[in-house]
Image (cartoon, rainbow, N blue to C red; front, side):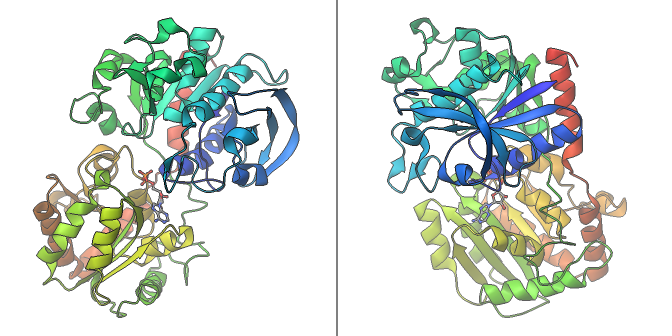
Length: 478
Ligand code: ADP
């Protein structure tokens, strides 16, 4: 079965968040499970640099007003499956963040990602005579028009839209309709229209044959007005086609027993290296090296959805606890300055920025990883935390609820507990749970037991890959 994945980022070449980690691992996991999988990406400079070109599949004189471009086929550094890359200098030859500059989003994002979807449609129409996909599997709004083109322009491939985060919808003014090659009749509730404009994610959710998202709880939540970002009605109407498949972890990259970012290896059987990582982390963040202080860690985009304003408000409430906090993140200016102001050099240390190796050290050196998200489709940092023996302390929402087992007395007794959950999106609830975790930390044998259970959890991609393959077989036959 041939499946073409369409996405706007993939680790290790271009990453702004969890989507990249998924795209760097899921296609390979599917291939290991027997699906003939390929990946289509935009030709940003970092992607072209990482591409060993095998050949040109097709070219075009003017792609969505970006001028000449072509689809290349080849092999991407760090990605096992064969890749297609849409090279079009007028659309993608821009360094840095794939979607925006510090001044805001690229003004032609609608044409840039429509072009990506058009390339998927061409491939689904047989542009590569040697490889014809039966299924086009698009990820997030950037791939949302691929199912629309297949339905509106014609195409035999079935299509899937996967929602990695419903809050990012790719909304553009109605005037852009002609630039996208969409027929006038598609501009309506039964089509691409959303709030008087064009919704790329909405288009994907309306036209794709199947819909998925990245956890079961999130699949339920996004059908409710409170979490559906305006698309809950459409998702309720399509509930029979919507399923939740929880993301996996690439344990070749996130493995404390073989991680070059750590001072010493460790695993569930041998935790000494974790103490070394804690000391190295405290040193790196300029905190006193205190093995006994419970160390809370955060690695996150700094946005309201991630609930980090709750953490800022919770800090004074835990001022009496023997604890430290390290935060690695970047995002909204107000949160960045709030955390900068909270840093005090002995209990709270903050690094505003994006640093992949340092993220590994924070996972390894922390005792607890905080993820107080208001909404979290799946969440990966808590899955990495489990493997690194940092107990996740998370809000009970989306994938966080599905992947962390609360340390209530029964779960502790049964050896199932792996972390801490709280319900209310309030600073009080977060602070109270931090206090509870710090109390348990003082009981070292109990804490070691929790760590061992956490580290033994298996969120490898194979289970998710098998679920996707079952979905593909239901759509296109084996
Ligand atoms: P989201 O995709 O919503 O940002 P996820 O938890 O699914 O959240 O994925 C976040 C990914 O981005 C993880 O791989 C995490 O380690 C990484 N990450 C987030 N912020 C940073 C940062 N400042 N530096 C390094 N890695 C980061």
